[in-house]
Length: 277
Length: 256
Image (cartoon, rainbow over all chains, first blue to last red):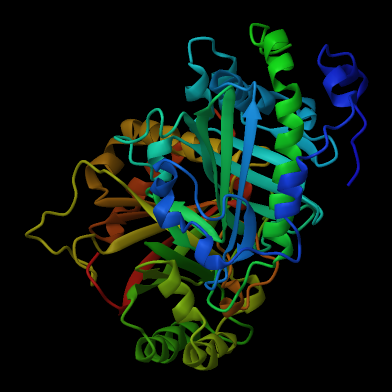
């Protein structure tokens, strides 16, 4: 993986300093739990149909790890505590970063190469009348990312929690504080438009903890979301290669450990700035 | 319910009659024999006429002949895959395509149907003039290629806006169209295109189907299409889009 050089315009932005600063090393405990030769027992994975189990107090048997499920889908989970980070900060981050390649790059420069959104999504992000959470839901991010398996074009459709299947009568403190998730697909960069694409459901589930928040990520690879219900969309006998859930789990640990280190500072500096800055 | 659409042209050496005969009586019969319980329905749409590109194009920018578009609906993805990957289906149905279709040029897509309301649907007590109940005997299928640079999510928004504006501006269409269905391509899921022998095919993110009582009302579609093309956002590459007037031939019939 390489770090993309900034353009002269990007280098002149006030937040370019975050791109240049040294990466924050990942949490060693999480790194230890995400190893290519140590998949978790699939019986400990959370099936996508039971997404509401995330609303239960306490923790699951496997809060961090990856595996390939017997039905061929890929699964990963990462629990990343983020002291000093608030839901407001994450709400802001999840719309602000989508407006420019470098903003997405700040998150993890060695693997985040580019992002684009449609004209309409951009207008919503820039509209001060649209609340932060509304800016997140219903948007499609087109990102170029390398999770260690080569650069890919990834399309992420962000959904409101109920569209992801959450029971909204239970979606409140202390069970939940926010969720940033959706569904999408990826395709290797440079592949023909007719190439096979891999679908996935993504869920970054947030709970408030003493002094900050905890981010509990779950990814279900091979699944598509239809009417709030997960549907396995890979042919029988086909398996998501183990390198993919492992690679994404490993990437998740690195990108969120880096983000939590600079998010409070960049939020304080830019939360009230012109979104187009 | 996911729905497969495959749009082919006849293989070299066949007349249209040869192709239609084979598609309906040989391929259709084989497919029907292997139709599995979980298949919703299988409709062949035999092309009567059609137009490719626009009158503003000096020459064609796409293959300008298509002879049939088939639609196969399934209860869910696992059953769709299970059907296409069943050894008998692979052995007998998939391998039959080369005898009638120019397979490498077959347009293939897995889609999701989105029903659009119409002011005058076929009455519930009147099955209509077609073999399939409740929709009318004349059908138009329109393959709309997304214009370069248009985001997928915007394409569907623009389509809805353009459709609403065209409905409002096309009274003859508005009065006579009996049903409108948009089929949106599920871009994640082209995983069984090998069944149809499809090569590096053009991608269509949307197909619209319009039903009328009889083929006499196809002119109403032209009125609508003229209005659709007036939508100010350049959302469709009209030179690489096309529409087909078709006759529905139900192979595995279940009322929709």
